[in-house]
Length: 445
Image (tube, rainbow, N blue to C red; front, side, top):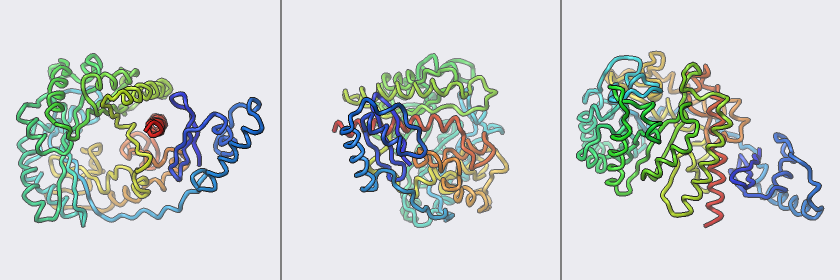
């Protein structure tokens, strides 16, 4: 399978199975489309000479001979459930100091009531991860919520406990915390820079955009406090990992401006995710928005290349595709590993496939407090990889999204094998831009 497309004023082609990416001229793109059974050739060849066409065809034939164009799909092995857990999300706080209008977790309480994870439950979650991690040495723990800063003593005691037991267990923990930054203090910034491998800061972009959807409990905007605290943390972080993670909705369909604004504020690492909501929500992204959103990604890509060429620090999460040293083939089939190698623990100790399932009784896998565990759901998630998703197997972008988000498929589309189509369209555009950027920047090195 070969995918040809135009982006940033250039023609590109992706050989799906080999992962080869090429910058090509218009003639070569048209000739490749003519050869592809899944593409429709555009235009005619009357403006090209016979010599030009013959030379381009000869180059295409050579790439085919080398196995980097129209390469065949390998036979992927059947997915196997190994029962190994590598990472946990600890929903340390079912509660939040903001009232984000698009929050899937209902003010951070996950369809239930205000609740905080006890230190004892958090320690048992660490023990659970160690026990189920097999020979895996490096383990990941993400403190999430709600707002985890509302339960910081439990966070600190959990990290202390993990540090005490990791050497004896032959493990190495890496911690991440996701915060809206409202309650950040100088002491917490110092602590995060000492203990957290990564810090994720939630800001949605321009002040008017952020304040419209992320008010505090009293209905007032939270932007000024979030921005000031987040910038203070980033400045003190000294090059350690962080990124700003926001959400765009139907309120800001011109979201490229928000990403660029975040970079202008002083954030070098940015992610802005499309909101996922049912169509009944006034903030939901809908099919009629898709073409405009794709244009936004291309506008962003153009400015992204320019800023980076000018020496400005700018990383956009969805444009970070390494076309030279990407993930291995087995990883491309499974994506984030939610429900299998990656799980979530709620304050009451319940274990879920990921934080998006927290509070859904039918997706409880077990409980770290009573030691209960059932393999049924993890086995289902592990063995329903990309190869089991029929629509995905026909998609040129399959190895970059790995079949998409399981929670979106289940909660919006009625099943783990059914892709969330609107998300697919945006993903494909992001991948096109990312591959184009990687090829252009590689060309200029």
